[in-house]
Structures are given as structure tokens and as C-alpha cells.
Image (cartoon, rainbow over all chains, first blue to last red; front, side, top):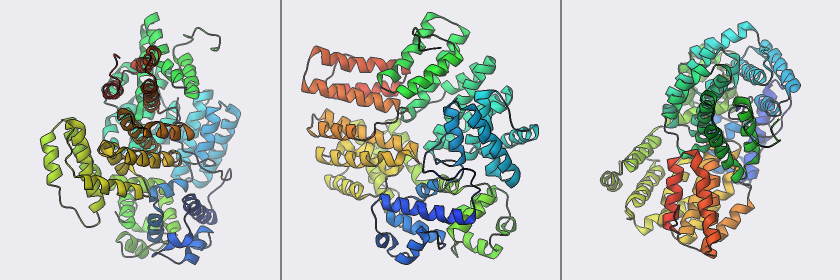
Length: 316
Length: 286
């Protein structure tokens, strides 16, 4: 399964309950990082908006700055508010942010580390009861369940998750990341239901956020992947719906993965040398492109879904 | 859209009253004034208010895109006309642009040139003046922040520019790719797509700038592995450049080989793109 949309940034502290002072410092730090990366001086950025002293104090986390002023300063820098805000995200989107640590452990197949992360986040959530902490907890728990088969969260939390997904009025980033990562915790029929719903809404998302559109597709294909491993009978409908959609070449990885899952499904239901060869030929694109890490991941995925179709002893 | 308005939009969707949202962080009056655009609010406070509603600053910023639809709508409309090959309507839209609000002139000009670019792709005819192309290039070269709109326009108007400009702009975008990767992967992919389009144009013109751009590309961090189509396109262009330098049977075979390799992907779009490049350069049997 592919984890959803994690972007990397600098290291922050583990277990950090974001305190007010920390937030202030982070905003200022990130601002400075963006400014120095562009080689801009304080006075150029401050021009017409605030005094150099004020901006400097903001960078050092000593003063507050009004949101409108920050936006104007960013404009002087040529940085979008979106880029600035991405750096300041506490749960997703940068190294040291909780989800990133979880994903790193997940990718390394590090069960003990992942288990610890989930348990710690469960503590965190039970302290704060915040929505963001709940989402992070479920995402991590889902990723952990994917590699270990163990569900660490309580039945009550699971019920809350299902309720939350059932009552989605709009698929935004929160919901897509949550569903994409936590789906292994859900019963198959729910995975199918939510995936189908998300798929139906993807076109809408496409018009205003390409990144989210891609993440949405990732989540849907995660569902296909998961269902193929649990209960293949849900797959033909979902795959047919997926293949009916036009996917732009700009997100070619989605095209690739959709094709991959389709071929694996064909092999599972009608095993043949021809079908196996098609999978091998598809993966050969990655080898040919020199995409060794990706090739490795798809090999493992193949082993997971259809077994060992490779004629070498790399596959165990 | 103003920050206050955006905030109000989110508060409404999350079903928070002014009181619920403000309590303990700020006053209802201050919040109301902020939402109405009458008073500003410390960024940190705004972040706190958002977090209480379960929204991070980044998500808040993302939502503003959803709300400022107008330019996206215009571009979607233009693309629909392009896909329908409706050159008449495109020409009409070019000559009769919709009047824009003050402050939107730049976006309007970008849309204007976007139409010219797509029209050129369909007909080989240039609707805009050389001066307009030069204005566009200057604007893009001076541009500090590349976003979807700028990258889109660049992608479609590169063919209208001379070799030197194509090279310079491609190099500009190349240099920002790595910084985009971390926080906006879709934009990162769009940037690489534009760079490769620049390279394709130079290769098709058999320009000396092609190998220079290629060398620049090889000097930066390679494209992410998941950009499968982009990586394949790059290999294809490289193989063609080898033939352009030394036309041998073996070198030609390499070009065909790259093409063959992408077939299992079943992407007519990618196959068409590579075929187009082939037709405009070596015109081999693929």
C-alpha cells in the first residue's frame, strides 16, 4: 500500500505538543528559511509593509505579526501563502511532523518502531481530544495494521472513524489522507463503499487541486490493492470504475499503478503465462527508466498480490 | 479572496458559531471584524482558531484555491475548446477577451497567451504579435513565483519563442524544480513537464541550445522516480539527440527501443506525445 502525500521538511522534536511559543517560533523560522533561500534581505522583504525591526522580531519568534501583513511580506518575497503554510504544518508535510515519522517507519517495515509511534499518538490523542490528533492516530494505526495485521486502536475509536467517513460531505485533504492511510482498519465493504464515493468525486477535485486529485487517486488505488488482498470480489466493480476514468499523463504514476493492479487482478482470476508476462513488461518500464526504488516496491507488491512470477532468486 | 472571508467560509462549513470559534483565543467582536475584512488578526491567533476547528494553516491555504475559481474556470474552458479542436471559438476568445477586474490584468494576459499557444498547437498559426510573445517572456523571466498558471502558459507558448528564450525559461524552471518537490509535488511534476517541453522544442529545431539544456538537466537532482512519463520522454529525447549527432542504425534502434518500452503502460497520451516528437524530428518507423 502506498502512504499518502507526505512531503518532507526539517526535523522538529518528537512528541512535541505544539506550545504557543513553539508555534510562534516555527512561523518565524519558516519565514526566515524562505527568505534566505531566495537570498533576499530583510529590507527588501519588509518594503512598504513593516519595519525591518518588526520583521526581524517576527523571524525570531519575539513578536506577533498580523496575518494580512505576513501575506504582504510573502508577496514581496514571491512566495505563496500556501508554500509558507506548508512549512508550518504540524501533523502532515514535514520531517519531524508526526505523520512523516510514521510513514518513514512504515516504509522501512519497522514494526516495533511503528507500534511505539501509534501507542504514543494514542496517548497524545487521549490527552488533547483534538481532531487533528485523532486523524494522525488513525492514519498511523492504519499504516501499522497494514504491516503487522494488528489493530491497536479501540473499538470506540474505530466506530468514530467509520462515523466520520460515513458523514463526509466533502472530500478534502483531511478525509483523503485519513481514508487512504487508515483503510486497513475498516471492514471490506466499507473500504469499497468509501472508495467508490471518493472516485465519484475525483473529477470535482481535479479542477482546483491537482495534488489532492492525485492523492485521491492514490487512496482509491490503495483500496483496490487492499481489497485484492482480502476480498477479491469487490475488485472488478472498482477496477472497472477506475478504468473508465480519464487520467492525465501528468500523474503517470497513477496510470501505472492502475494498469498494474488491473493486470494483477487478471492474473489472480485467470492465471496464465501471458498475464504474468504483461506484469513483467510493465515493471520493465521502471527498470528501463532507472527507477530502482520504485521497481523494488512494485516487485514486493507483485509478490504480495500474485506471488513469485520472477525468474530470479531475488524474490524470496 | 481575503483571509477573513476564507476563514468565515471554513467556520461556516465546520458549523462553528462566532462564539464557539473565538472563546478563549480572541473576542467575538475581533473575530467578526476580521471576517468582515475590517481588522487584521495576528497570524498565530488565526492559526490557533483554525486548529481548534481541526484545520491546519496549510489546509486553510489550500482551500483558498477552491474559492478563487475564476481563473481556473477560464483555463478549463480554454482547454475544453482545445480538446474539441474548436479553432474558431479559440480565435474568437482571443480577439474578444472578457473584461477583467482591476488587478487581474496579469492573469488575463496569461490566459490570452494561453489561447494563442493552444491555437498554434492546433493550426501552426500565430494569433498573437511578436511583441506580445516578448512581453510574455519578459514577464515570465521576471516572475518570482512559479504557479500552475505560469507553468501552464509556459508549456503552451514555448513554441512561439525563439531558441534563446526557450532555453532561458526552461533553465529558470529547471532551477526551481527541486524547491517545489517538498511542498507541492503536482507543481513539481508540472515544472518538469515544462522543462521537457522546452527541450523537445529545441531538439525539434535541432538547436545548439538543446545539448546545453540537456547538460543543465543532468546537473540537477534527477526527476523523481514516480514521474514515469517524464522520465521516459527525457530518455526518448536523449536518444533522438544521439541520432541527430550520429545517424547510425544502432542509434536509431535505441529510439525505437525507448518507444517500445512505454507501450505496456497503455497510455495513448504518452504514445501520441512521443510520436509527435518523432514526426517533428527523425520521422522513424516506431
